[in-house]
Length: 277
Image: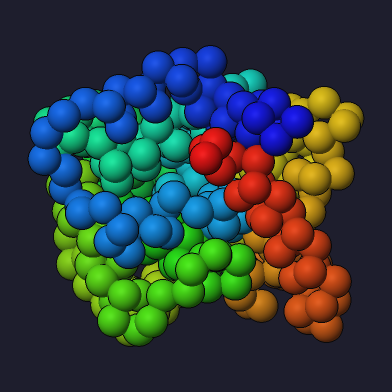
């Protein structure tokens, strides 16, 4: 039963090509960007990423330019799972894969970003390759992954390891073209705060949030466990984001019932996806 559940979860996240990609990522010989058991491999290899990934999507929608780029150039409405598959493969390749494969993945994403350009409602141009915009996407992801791991991760990181995680993730962001990338958790908090004046809940952002939270392309049996992961992700969102995205804020419930359910859900995922002994 564990094997069937684990495979189903893996295919949902990694897609039909997941097994082949897994073999390539972990089976290709050669140097890696990151040592095994280093903080980035601990965080990105943990079941808490299911919660962190949802939180990152929610948080990233608050930047109008990033959200407009997604709305105009991404197939998130009709191809939500395809986008998830590509993102999870990129994270796995850059974290665990051979250095040549990791660089090839970065080069592919950079080529895609160069084609994602457009105009904001006020006439200002946007580009996915803009280093400032890339930095926003990066800090929103890293903050989300780290916060989710802090609450739901199996192995807690001490402060030095948390700082190392931020620095390691920054290596990938710089290769993608981001600049002024934070290298410690304190710098990460400062970077997030610096974007506050630019962030707001646009109609496009609220539509994307509704799609992720209320209308996911999932069979009925999967809706309840997915709802637990969503509740756990929302529970990690800063209070100031809730009115912007029309998210509920129930601090007592989030610290008790939601936290317990999220812990049970990530524990079940971790159990199901653990390789056989």
